[in-house]
Image (tube, rainbow, N blue to C red; front, side):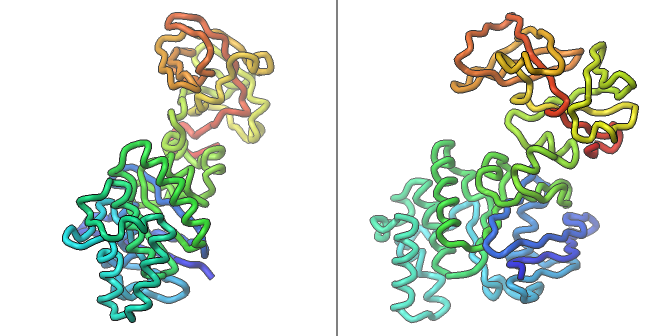
Length: 357
């Protein structure tokens, strides 16, 4: 049984189609991330699952039960928002127990659930404090705890880490992953941050203009993006794209011709114009160049040192090319660098549809 199923979901705001014929099945205990840029519909989809928005058409099932027109409180979900949405006049303990008291649970049951959530999230010393006396990370833990005490099967997270600084986000990412492993509940997580998506998700649904572009594991999306949009969205820095042409001698980019024998679908590549993609980390440098199918030299126009890595900006066959090098290499701007390119590390997209070839 799927934990959450969305079938033929449509949502219109007046004459504007926000979500279009969405279908998605989320497995029991899965961590699914809805990923996309602002306005793509990811938070809207989450709010539809939560019952915070009335859908135009379609059906939503949670644990096999049709909840399409049920109230949020009846759906068996716990939700964590981007803004912590804590009651400032209440202590942490009061915030955690408030919803349970409204549901008229026995006092002993409430105390047990609050104590369990506080232990899991390591906020036991904070129970008597008010939100104003907490850091951003502590407030977000309390917000997660408020969902946790509901003892539900499905947790919904709407960009919960976006208000935190970079280090705290990284720390809480690890904690969320550990929390999912410990609870084994279904979690649906909305973010525009692809690093969060890649590190947290069992599967990622990449959205654009109210539609799911690709739904797959992080590894599959990274290695086999279904179209140019997905390829560009996943990866930091993003993929290099160049206009090329497949001919009898291989791939031509500008005045350079490269062999394409190493590409898995080389035999299916029709002659004609293509968009070529290659990730900065897949441009061979150093000792890896000697095994490359094509070798050349480029000039380092700009360097971005990042400690372990250095991102190099250069020009190749009339196109901008970014490549990633070992951060300990001694390179300077204006210096020539030998690079290698392999068709097996490239991605080819249709020149018109931008779909993967």
